Length: 299
Image (cartoon, rainbow, N blue to C red; front, side, top):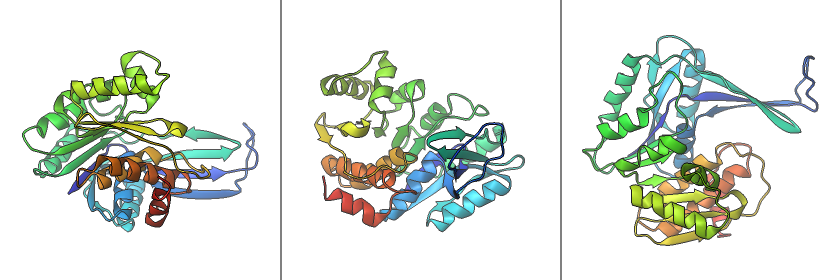
């Protein structure tokens, strides 16, 4: 079973307007709402690929109920911790030539709610997959990732960590099955600017030596590089298409990799991850199965 954790899920409210004038009343030309959050995105795309998962995390208020209902409608099982006060956040994204974002803060998460999440995580068993993705709200301990992985360290659980800088570096001692920095984030971890594939591969290998089992480095239009658990290097270009949406593309790549790596074929996992990320980037919403496998033919 795959479990995903989203600490601060949201409703993404996307507004398009021909012109945005600050300080004036503006009218939208179109509006869309999507259930958002990195772990939730992974679960939704896994469902498209025929893999069951359970979405964990925290929800609150009427927006929390809407998030939970939206995830369930996508075919994903949920087991969120329901907070007694506050509301799950709404992120407003205004598209008018350039994109302007205003992201909500989210509800306060008390210690009792964190313990409820830990109890749910205690249900994981050998062979399960746990995905920890995204930033940590300021109402949670900054070492929450480490606390979760330490708690599960006595079991053979494949953990996937999609985070940046110290959040990622601090969990490498728990030997995560997959980490997915982009090339810029990889350089930031070591205080260097990476300019060539050789440099990217070299520093990805350093992360493997520090504890990561598989290191997947996304490079936007330049494709992706994987250094797998055997030390083998795999490269993949990008799919051709018109980019409409960058939100959730990285999460989709993670979902595709998880689905493709079930039999230990990492070359295929990289290709499926690339196609899945592309299918989201070329859509207004998250990737759909037919689009994913159509793009896979390009690779």
